[in-house]
Length: 149
Image 1 (tube, helix red, strand yellow):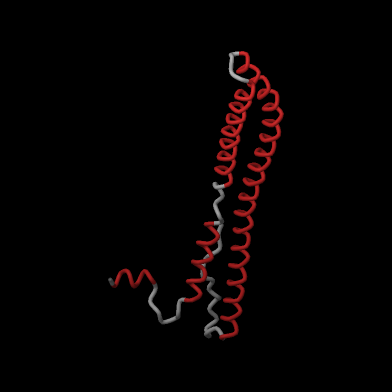
Image 2 (image 1 turned 90 degrees about the horizontal axis):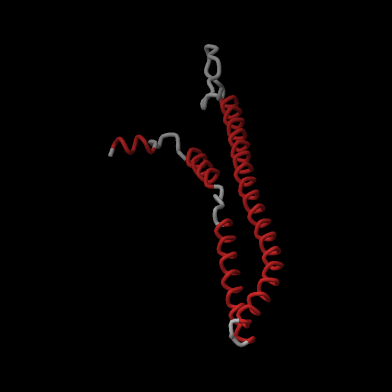
Protein backbone atom coordinates (compact mmCIF):
# COMPACT_ATOMS: atom_id res chain seq x y z
CA UNK A 1 0.00 0.00 0.00
CA UNK A 2 1.26 3.50 -0.76
CA UNK A 3 2.53 5.71 2.00
CA UNK A 4 0.49 8.81 2.84
CA UNK A 5 1.66 12.02 1.19
CA UNK A 6 1.81 13.89 4.50
CA UNK A 7 3.31 12.17 7.52
CA UNK A 8 1.98 13.09 10.87
CA UNK A 9 4.21 12.74 13.88
CA UNK A 10 2.53 11.22 16.92
CA UNK A 11 1.08 13.88 19.16
CA UNK A 12 2.91 13.88 22.48
CA UNK A 13 1.14 16.85 23.90
CA UNK A 14 3.82 19.31 22.73
CA UNK A 15 4.39 20.93 19.39
CA UNK A 16 7.14 19.60 17.17
CA UNK A 17 10.37 21.50 17.09
CA UNK A 18 11.57 23.23 13.94
CA UNK A 19 14.43 20.76 13.75
CA UNK A 20 11.97 17.86 13.64
CA UNK A 21 9.96 19.55 10.90
CA UNK A 22 13.09 20.30 8.85
CA UNK A 23 14.21 16.70 9.28
CA UNK A 24 10.86 15.37 8.03
CA UNK A 25 10.88 17.82 5.11
CA UNK A 26 14.44 16.87 4.13
CA UNK A 27 13.58 13.18 4.27
CA UNK A 28 10.48 13.72 2.13
CA UNK A 29 12.40 15.77 -0.45
CA UNK A 30 15.16 13.18 -0.72
CA UNK A 31 12.53 10.46 -1.15
CA UNK A 32 10.83 12.54 -3.85
CA UNK A 33 14.14 12.96 -5.68
CA UNK A 34 14.76 9.20 -5.51
CA UNK A 35 11.31 8.51 -6.96
CA UNK A 36 11.88 11.04 -9.75
CA UNK A 37 15.20 9.41 -10.63
CA UNK A 38 13.59 5.97 -10.66
CA UNK A 39 10.87 7.22 -13.01
CA UNK A 40 13.47 8.81 -15.29
CA UNK A 41 15.45 5.56 -15.41
CA UNK A 42 12.36 3.56 -16.38
CA UNK A 43 11.37 5.97 -19.15
CA UNK A 44 14.92 6.26 -20.45
CA UNK A 45 15.30 2.48 -20.50
CA UNK A 46 12.17 2.17 -22.67
CA UNK A 47 13.42 4.83 -25.08
CA UNK A 48 16.89 3.28 -25.34
CA UNK A 49 15.36 -0.13 -25.96
CA UNK A 50 13.13 1.27 -28.72
CA UNK A 51 16.06 3.06 -30.39
CA UNK A 52 18.28 -0.03 -30.15
CA UNK A 53 15.65 -2.27 -31.72
CA UNK A 54 14.92 0.27 -34.44
CA UNK A 55 18.62 0.74 -35.19
CA UNK A 56 19.30 -3.00 -35.28
CA UNK A 57 16.38 -3.58 -37.61
CA UNK A 58 17.58 -0.78 -39.86
CA UNK A 59 21.07 -2.29 -39.98
CA UNK A 60 19.87 -5.83 -40.70
CA UNK A 61 17.38 -4.58 -43.27
CA UNK A 62 20.02 -2.48 -44.97
CA UNK A 63 22.54 -5.31 -45.16
CA UNK A 64 20.07 -7.83 -46.56
CA UNK A 65 18.67 -5.27 -48.95
CA UNK A 66 22.16 -4.60 -50.31
CA UNK A 67 22.78 -8.27 -50.97
CA UNK A 68 19.42 -8.89 -52.59
CA UNK A 69 19.46 -5.65 -54.56
CA UNK A 70 22.79 -6.46 -56.15
CA UNK A 71 21.42 -9.67 -57.62
CA UNK A 72 18.03 -8.21 -58.51
CA UNK A 73 19.52 -5.11 -60.09
CA UNK A 74 21.52 -7.13 -62.57
CA UNK A 75 18.54 -9.37 -63.33
CA UNK A 76 16.25 -6.37 -63.74
CA UNK A 77 18.69 -4.48 -65.97
CA UNK A 78 19.32 -7.45 -68.24
CA UNK A 79 15.58 -8.20 -68.30
CA UNK A 80 14.88 -4.67 -69.50
CA UNK A 81 17.63 -5.09 -72.07
CA UNK A 82 15.96 -8.28 -73.28
CA UNK A 83 12.76 -6.25 -73.83
CA UNK A 84 14.63 -4.03 -76.26
CA UNK A 85 15.78 -1.14 -74.00
CA UNK A 86 19.39 -0.06 -74.43
CA UNK A 87 21.67 -1.55 -71.80
CA UNK A 88 22.75 1.84 -70.38
CA UNK A 89 19.09 2.97 -70.11
CA UNK A 90 18.21 -0.30 -68.40
CA UNK A 91 20.85 0.29 -65.73
CA UNK A 92 19.65 3.90 -65.21
CA UNK A 93 16.09 2.66 -64.67
CA UNK A 94 17.39 0.12 -62.17
CA UNK A 95 19.41 2.80 -60.34
CA UNK A 96 16.31 5.02 -60.04
CA UNK A 97 14.33 2.10 -58.62
CA UNK A 98 17.09 1.47 -56.04
CA UNK A 99 17.02 5.12 -54.96
CA UNK A 100 13.25 4.96 -54.40
CA UNK A 101 13.58 1.78 -52.32
CA UNK A 102 16.35 3.38 -50.24
CA UNK A 103 14.19 6.43 -49.50
CA UNK A 104 11.32 4.20 -48.42
CA UNK A 105 13.57 2.27 -45.99
CA UNK A 106 14.92 5.53 -44.52
CA UNK A 107 11.41 6.91 -43.96
CA UNK A 108 10.39 3.76 -42.08
CA UNK A 109 13.53 3.98 -39.89
CA UNK A 110 12.93 7.65 -39.08
CA UNK A 111 9.34 6.85 -38.13
CA UNK A 112 10.52 4.25 -35.59
CA UNK A 113 13.00 6.66 -33.99
CA UNK A 114 10.42 9.44 -33.70
CA UNK A 115 8.20 7.28 -31.47
CA UNK A 116 10.38 8.08 -28.47
CA UNK A 117 8.44 9.56 -25.58
CA UNK A 118 11.10 12.02 -24.45
CA UNK A 119 10.45 11.26 -20.77
CA UNK A 120 7.22 13.26 -20.64
CA UNK A 121 6.03 11.64 -17.40
CA UNK A 122 9.29 12.53 -15.66
CA UNK A 123 9.21 16.14 -16.88
CA UNK A 124 5.60 16.57 -15.73
CA UNK A 125 6.32 15.02 -12.35
CA UNK A 126 9.43 17.13 -11.80
CA UNK A 127 7.58 20.31 -12.79
CA UNK A 128 4.81 19.45 -10.35
CA UNK A 129 7.31 18.80 -7.57
CA UNK A 130 9.13 22.07 -8.22
CA UNK A 131 5.87 24.01 -8.23
CA UNK A 132 5.02 22.51 -4.85
CA UNK A 133 8.40 23.55 -3.49
CA UNK A 134 8.06 27.11 -4.82
CA UNK A 135 4.59 27.60 -3.38
CA UNK A 136 4.84 29.99 -0.45
CA UNK A 137 3.26 29.25 2.88
CA UNK A 138 0.69 32.05 2.78
CA UNK A 139 0.04 31.92 -0.96
CA UNK A 140 -3.25 30.38 -2.02
CA UNK A 141 -3.02 27.24 -4.11
CA UNK A 142 -4.03 27.14 -7.75
CA UNK A 143 -7.23 25.29 -6.80
CA UNK A 144 -8.14 27.96 -4.30
CA UNK A 145 -7.47 30.63 -6.91
CA UNK A 146 -9.63 28.79 -9.44
CA UNK A 147 -12.50 28.61 -6.92
CA UNK A 148 -12.17 32.32 -6.17
CA UNK A 149 -12.44 33.17 -9.89
